[in-house]
Image 1: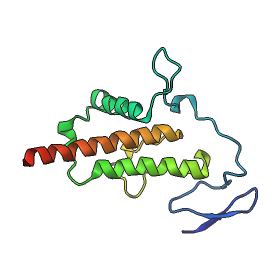
Image 2: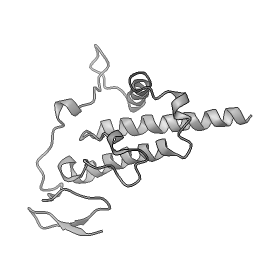
Image 3: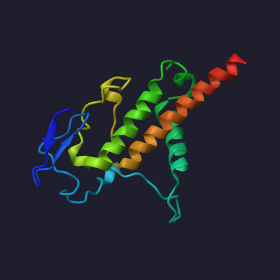
Length: 153
């Protein structure tokens, strides 16, 4: 890991992945607002209550099935933990954004452990959106493993 210096205060930091330069640490950054197109709908329709993480993940998983066609049958073809690796990549990105801010995290290229073609890496500057994607992918992987266990009985 190559250390990188904050352009405002000079603080050194080291990251396991690429960071956009010039780097500004969280202490020196202006608060960010996610772009409107990146925002996650976090309120139930007709309600002022925020949806829970479980509700957001369930809705995303349903969207993956209905809009993307990633059905259980399709998921069963990913036999080598690909959905777990993909979920971990989105979760890690959310953590990197929490530490360094979205403007300092390189999102344009897929992470090293990304299991699929680059066109399927669709990161968001919104931490919650990345965690929702992670949760839905991990839920799909759990379901795939559970189906395998049920077949083995």
